Image 1 (cartoon, rainbow, N blue to C red):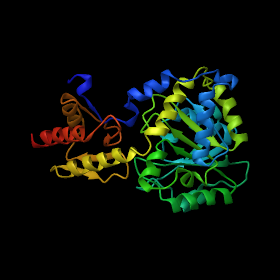
Image 2: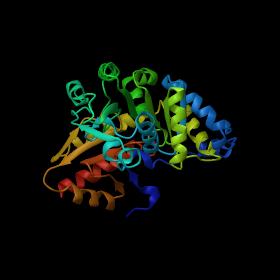
Image 3: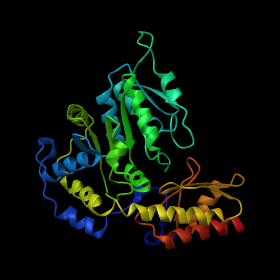
Image 4: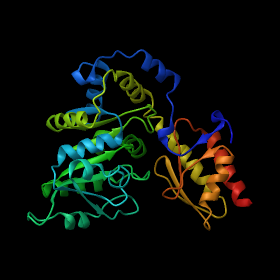
Length: 340
């Protein structure tokens, strides 16, 4: 395979590496001990992120999975239930943490092609107050979902339904900044109806590590205690918070470049016979290959120095380490395979 520097890595936007300027910010970070609450860089990041999302407080955590788990355990008690999409990250890709560690029953619901849960399905899944049933306490949504931006009107309607029925609402916003840039909507407006929101710095924003959980102060205080129990009480973590702060300064608006490259990739793939493509909303492109040839195509791409994934269909993710030339290389490699 090609040397690392020549690889076009489209597996995920988690593979981004700190830019030279971000490394300088890390090196210059003023740090303290975050468990004692005196790391000024972490505190500044938490205050800034909470303000961006229109929430009272925020908690810096190691990962999006940890942020979502802290939210689940802060909202719910043992024997409670969370409504979640059948293909949602919190249900399918986070090791069952809510059930294993919190005794929380997930109630998966079918998702539509845009990632939404039908309001009627949400309503029907809420259990009556009866000792036979788990107590339905939380609605979990995800934005973006497989790169799709959930409609603003839907988010308002779904959270209003949850609150009307006595549920809290949590948003897995791992790529929420992508949704905000793509829809040209302030991120606080998207987050408005939710009682808690998690956002990642380590995906499209390009920080090496970290996410934040945002919400009202009492909830974040509970989440901070839970984070400690989960082993997430880090010390001089201002080094990582500095990277996240740099990302907020410099890498938010440039997400539009990733979206443009995803469209370029989708357009290029769509012109290849035997490839079907789903038009992307943001930075994730899904495609399918005629016949049972996905594994063979992935192996061909890897041999050409192009990496993608096939776990949930052929998937390509653009990010700050992939430029238009890299996209064109990927398209050419796919075309070569299909022509053969």
